[in-house]
Image (cartoon, rainbow, N blue to C red; front, side, top):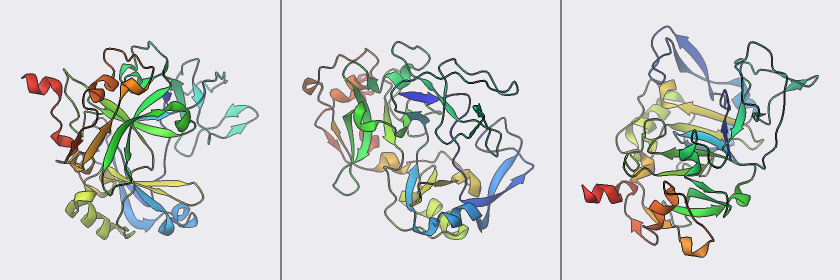
Length: 296
């Protein structure tokens, strides 16, 4: 598994944007705000966004599952120094064996999450390299039911996923606690939005503010040609995080049976946390009483 390097992979905004000279609500050290206009971007229209699949944008840390390879690139001096094992994202353009920045001046890439790394201990708590497993949240066949289960890493090859949990981005989903941290992965595009969304700002604002399903960080549209477009609540001037996000308001089943695998998780592994809850189902994700909560 790999996590973002010096910059994260960029997904363009579905709507054209305008910059305002006022502090951002998403990044406290950013002196400007980027807001969506009422016009869909030309790129989104060309990709036929009206027939795209809308999915929940999850607030976490982006990861990529691939077989580990090492690359050495001659980056320009004006880019930040990256780890020796950094690799570029697939869509990065190369000219004469030199990586080219995108229109925003970024070169997206990844650094490996290696076994024993203290820097990425929360990423590592969701994978077991010896058993070849990852701890994943995914939808079940039963409508609206989510499941946390162990998935072979081989089944996730070349996929990108989001790491969420106690120590990620201020824990907007209220998962676990400092004494009992919990983390897991969510495949990008796996949490589809069931009800069709109108692609105009007024209807989208109404959905975000008035629908239980709209209590999400944002939307990512997956177009038929493979192109992605996003819309964040902050692009509409709306706040995030929110109370009772949709992700944790949904029913959840837990299927993490360590006896099925030759698996010896690390002490801080989230596999152990969910293995203790194996076979249980909760009406709402937020109803889980973590072990150290019960002791207090």
